[in-house]
Length: 131
Image (cartoon, rainbow, N blue to C red):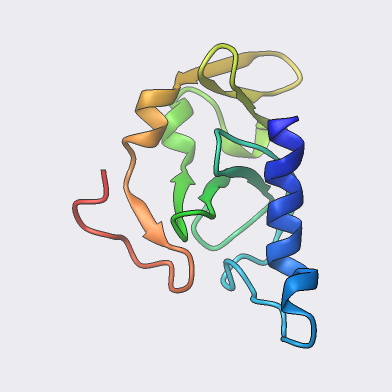
């Protein structure tokens, strides 16, 4: 139930909730233009799988309660060509970020991902001392 509520909260944030009736919706992550898939991340976050993008990222972990995101760069899965990664999935039970191709799975510990630099959602600028 918690994952469903997090996704619903994100949806309400994108479109504007009933409590904000008459107000314009707030746009989140204005620089992202090629989001291919949205799935649940850890509590307070969603995982965004990206297609081709200027930064070459596989995706972003969007921590919407903090108004920040973490870049999921190909180097996190060093031995694979990023264009081959089809799926990013957050496994809450194992505490890992999982990447998959048609041939293989990789998993990175939650602590490793959450220790990566954070960026301000509205500007994309890296926050110093964000770890």
